[in-house]
Length: 536
Image 1 (cartoon, one colour):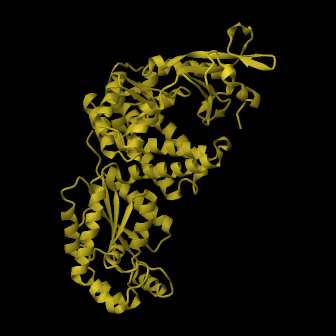
Image 2 (cartoon, one colour):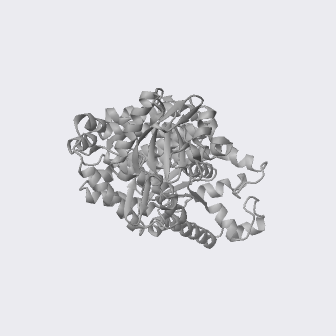
């Protein structure tokens, strides 16, 4: 689908001789809202004849208007790249850029200089060459851009919870169709609940942002692919022109987009540096406070956009598949911000024999896209035994000896600490049935800037016995525990005393898995964001 662009018109635009400067070649790229023709050293960008809920390019006058908006707005941070809006005329059976044709314009394009592909910040990320000095250059471009603004009431009002909710509600409405595809129900409901609760509970903080003038006419689409750095120049281009309410936003929201994109690409330290430096240079501690909320919002938007792209015919089968994968990854990241925030978090799944802890741990790790460290797996791998085969009885005594257990937990902690040191979240999956092992865990991670949450899986005794009985008839069960081990293992479990684990939640695993996951996510979100209302 070309959205109003005939095959003949596209064929004209793909021919080098169609352009006044006669380039050597022309490359055609499509997005869900644009046709882009790269005709070195220029680029011609046409808006598709589409009308979505958030965007309307359905008429020629509207396309002209938004082309002019695109040039005007992007000249703020990428001045000499955006040259002008140029008309294309139709003469008989063909088209021309020549104004002397004397006809009414047939279509309009944004005319801009081509930016060298190797200098986009996303390329440094892909090549592993991104540096803090590059982040500093971006910060030096952004700080005066925000400081020089004196927003009027029509801009400031978009910082209120009521106005923000218009955008977030629209996102949730537009992604309902993707539940069960690129986002699961538990994630959708958790993020929606988190968003509404945050806007409600921290209303005074949002109002304070308005009174401080922190709501600006910003960029609105500030991510790595839109930042171009050469030796002498920083160009931040392709801001949102098609809908003012996406561009009228809190500075924290603009910065959170770029910080989220750095997180998404594995640059967590650079992401934290960006937020901290922008907060310091703008004398804006509230920016730090709101970072996780807006990162969640931004990751969710990217998930929405990629989900939509995954159903666009013109991107091709490969493109749709890639878009769907990216959408799932973005939604997973949004869930992570809602549930654990940006700080490295260790989710410890513990519980009695057959309590369901491993199933929950595996599912949560998958939904949050984080590493799952299982004591059962580590114990067997360390002994050179097959993971999904029950260990022979003559070997189990040594395998589960006290010393072997201590070594297994230490190995699990060491593996997890390596990820935590990189700013990542991890899931630890073990019984943690002895107080000394829980104390060892807390001590082991005491020197890290991480949060530890305990999730204790629970189920009635008869349910746990039934689970163990079923294991005998199943293949590829990682745990060696069976029904005959129940009494011994159950008695050996040392229930945490009151006050021992302050970051502990309880989950009744004798429930549908989706209900369990939703409950875990909401309880973790409560601990992270709402347990104690921050001082304004």
